[in-house]
Length: 143
Image (tube, rainbow, N blue to C red; front, side, top):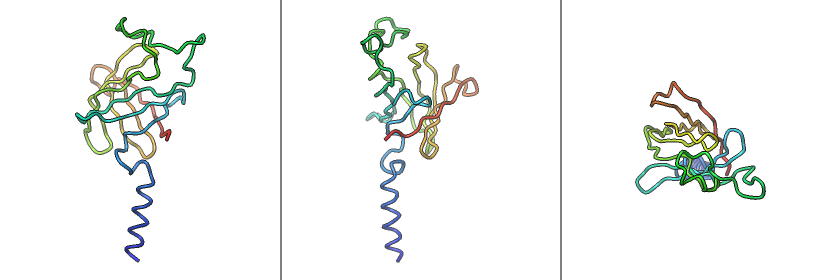
């Protein structure tokens, strides 16, 4: 009976995406449901995220671009495929920190941390390295 229960438990855990592989490396809906972000892990162990889908990706028949980027040479890049989360590292189980998040609607970069909470991520963007001076958004699993 113990073997059957152990096999059942293993099957359930493996079918749940939060327990299969790296729980951060998934596709997540943004809080407003207007975009999807794919979080992935680089060979150096750092986590990044790119925009893989935007609900309103076109304006006037053309793909929306990163028009507010502080680097003028990057303002021609399309938003879909844009790296918006970079250089996060594992601080503790379920917690990534030490990275940056880019807001293409304002062109601003913020320090950030991500906390895994069941089937969603809490992303905290903040300024001057002080988490108290920031805002938290929740992303939920899109896969």
